[in-house]
Length: 236
Image 1 (cartoon, rainbow, N blue to C red):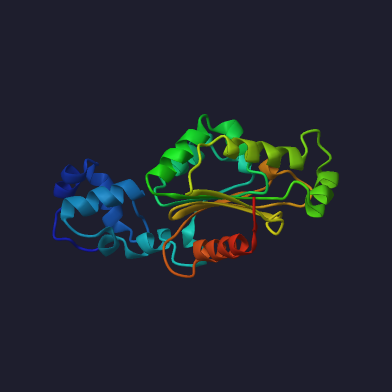
Image 2: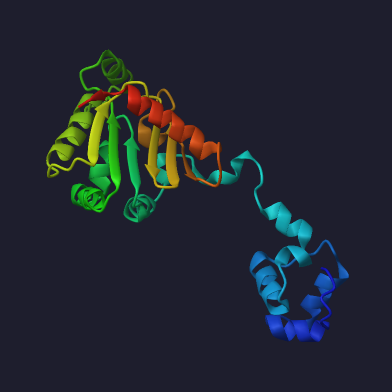
């Protein structure tokens, strides 16, 4: 730890730890306190934590291509429903649901239609990109899944839910079969991405939570992909 001109006893009282703990920090440059103690110490001394423990702080800060990854889930169903609710409720400019059916949204989020309408009425752009229930791509996928609640039925449930929302120009829907292997859900500067494993349903595929931190990062790459899909999609 860098010399901040404060005696161990003083620092211990300021941070609320024992003198022996502070002496261990001072006596071994490789020993660092846990992140909360680092922040408390830095605040007490009026300096930045990186000044006291430069290697520890820098190693904890992502600087590579993965820094926009907030969390990763082995299954989409492993992400808490509260995460989806928080992202939906906090977004104020853009909400994009580019799942092939988007069926699960209506099952997991009460009054979703009313919530989306309120978002649109307040100025947000809401877009749904769904598969065409009558396309050959959908029919082939139904053969692979071989489940009673077919892909086309799940798509039609979404279309029916959207049709019940009072006419709002800022809520739009289009057909696209090109995104059957990748679902992207955008909420302003945050995003949930599910790359679909070929033999599994959407809930069983992994999912990544991203937050936009700069130009041409993971968020922007996926956002550009969705924009291109939307421009080439067919009106519902």
